[in-house]
Amino acid sequence: MCTLLAGLVSPAAFALTPEQAGKIAAGDSDERIAALNQRIAAGDATLVPLLQAMRDDAVKTSAGKAYIVKDGKAVEAATGEPAALPADAEDVVNNNRMRQQLDAAIAALKLLSPERSERAKALVELKDSADEGKLALIEQAERAETDVALKVQLNLLRAAVMISSADPAKRVAAAKALASSPEPATRSLLLDKLGSETDPAAKAAIQAAIDGLSGQLAWGERLGVLFTGISLGSILLLVALGLAITYGLMGVINMAHGELMMIGAYATYVVQNLFKQHLPALFDYYILVAIPASFLVAALVGAVLERTVIRWLYGRPLETLLATWGISLVLMQAVRSLFGAQNVGVENPAWLSGGVQVLPNLVLPFNRIAILAFAALVLAGVALLIGKTRLGLFVRGVTQNRRMASCVGVDTARIDMLAFALGAGIAGLAGCALSQIGNVGPDLGQSYIVDSFMVVVLGGVGQLAGTVVAGLGLGVLNKLLEGVAGAVLAKIMVLVFIVVFIQKRPQGLFAIKGRSAE
Image (tube, rainbow, N blue to C red):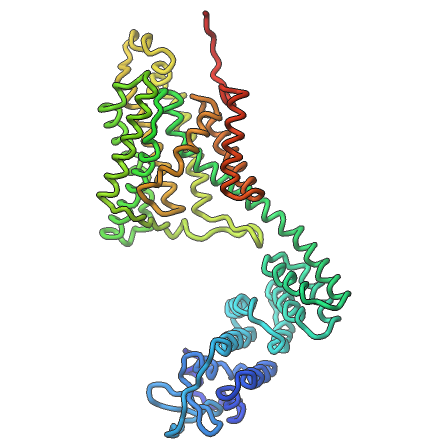
């Protein structure tokens, strides 16, 4: 809009003739586009005020002349001089095709801007809309460009336009140039042109370019699958870590584990809303408060469950399973009553939004990278807690021989409560992490409870190392199979694999070492 205002106050800046402005503003779409491309080919940057005014529906025409109207005042589009708007002046009507041409023309003219950022932005805007009508301007911009990176992009843009040329030789040259552009969009463009290509030489050149690009893009696709699998595995690891304590170390089949994770996610949602209402300036840091809050809330709920229900059911797996399943239903209904049955949204802080582009077809989201790092930190914390602290020593002692631990003065009931609360708190941390990559709802935990049990059983009951290997392994395996068989069949195949594996090795990947005397 600033450019338009500059044009209104600077009549000498206009180089258009009234006839040219009139042809661009009114008439048949094909004729208007032809007139527009003629001025673009001449590199006429003074077109921009007229084009912006047309895009803003601020142009009227009368007797073959175009007028830019703003704040009730009119100027001639060709000269920029004030003029009386004729009584029979009609609004310029732009269909979708014409609007696309206007946007592309403005972007093309910005290729001649003295500002590098403007030229770079114009290249992005023109990537999918450039045509032969803008070829002369693209070539002019390429000759004038001094930035090496932008010059390469202009060359590739020129090749993308030339691939649609009527001259087979130009299409061959364009295909060879495009072979050096490892962009998914370039491969899609070449595939589209391959089907309609009739010249044998051009067809062969396009096919060779597609083959070369496919090889380059394949690495991005493979690494993308690997990263997605590791990301899924880190989520499974977070979910299963708490279960590895309550089930693996304590022997409690906790079917409410998923709901404890859900409670952690809702705790994150509540903290987010509190920051929105009371500390909006610090909103980007709410996650730093949500992490301990989700742990403490889930741990408190876990401690209450252990003291009121679980403590009476140790050594009775079937009753524990049924009781915790009932608790899961109660917790889900309680959340529905408090927050509603619909999913709620948890926003990412600004520093967790976006991603890092490693390859043209591989972007690693910051929130997924953060979850990977978070899972590693939680795992390290749990390992240190279990292996190096007094509480961890007591937990291991009670797990291995409850009576002996009680005989030497260990308060086994208190240790049971603390261990169960720890497992519940870790589930809350998993919920906090999951809230950053998806919506939060009452059924959130149901999606992960089966997978988390599979991770613990496959890794070996009571083995944190096995939980890590099984979680990451199942995540990668699941994503690899999805690419071959689809999401549903991949789940079935993973389940079959686990069943067969447990049949052959019931103790899991990592068996507990020990001695027994019969």
